[in-house]
Length: 451
Image 1 (tube, rainbow, N blue to C red):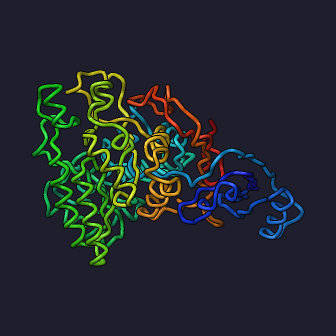
Image 2: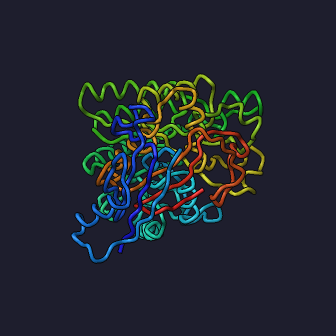
Image 3: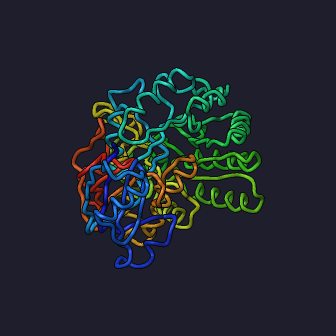
């Protein structure tokens, strides 16, 4: 028999309603959870109310489930976070992360759903590897979904069997980590994805403009005396691909946007999509791109090296403005674990990427909410509702009948991250004082993380 969970005296923050706009004194709500779903939301629900609801729902009075009461006084409650861009390195690189340790890290960060990228070894371009990932995913305490690749072997030339892989359980398609340089392959993929109504996520970095990736060209030249990653690498491919997306009507996701020009291209494309009624344009911002600039490489070295690289203060502010006005509708972590030994290599040889699932929420509170760029309601739109909507996932908001996927948090509490649940520890945010503490994560009515 399923247990009932009663959360009392929490302050709800739901991106799909106005409940959190009435003032904190009017926002306190109790939540009754049963069978993995939110069954009742009311200002006050006591034990008698809970069992009265159960008797009416199950039509039983002889055998009552156990009722657990969870006091949430002083905490806010939002829909569980949804990350559409995570690397769990499984199969092939499990010394960095595997699906289980990645899921633990996600739960500790307030995430109840994650969508995995497909650049594993072997990559997810076939049904066998897809089944392996989904089988392991089904064993975790949170919802773990995965994309499949767009092209076979991530070689950018031949499309995978998208019909078969979607039927098998892939929720979208991406060659993340490697850009697709052939525009005709992109067009074919978008035409097919439009028919299947699935998202395509694109890593927009044209190798023509890159010598040493992971370092902004300005910083590479001034600090290291080498050529780095020019901003045109991103700008050129975004410009090409939004046009194809508008022509095909595909669900296009521009991953980890890093330049002001890229933000403006997405803004213009979204306006055209509204005018024409064709094209579904999305863009991701990563917490590191709205929190740090290229100068972080001087302080943190390879721990601040990622693709696309950290850029300038002007770019950081453009990304924040894009999040504020809805041009950028998704906050995604690009959680990219690497071993300590790899990250200790000289900066030009060290791999790009940082872990991000456990710090993302605190970074968003610190750099977006506290300065007044985003309200909490808007933040949960970017981190829960919009990501869930793009992938058609059954979560992302708080309402009766919805999945009981929740994050309980204190946005006023100061936190410092000294270690992580992730198997890897490659973060430039270790030891940094931030705000926004994830106190508890609930997925399908089960407590999967408690601080």
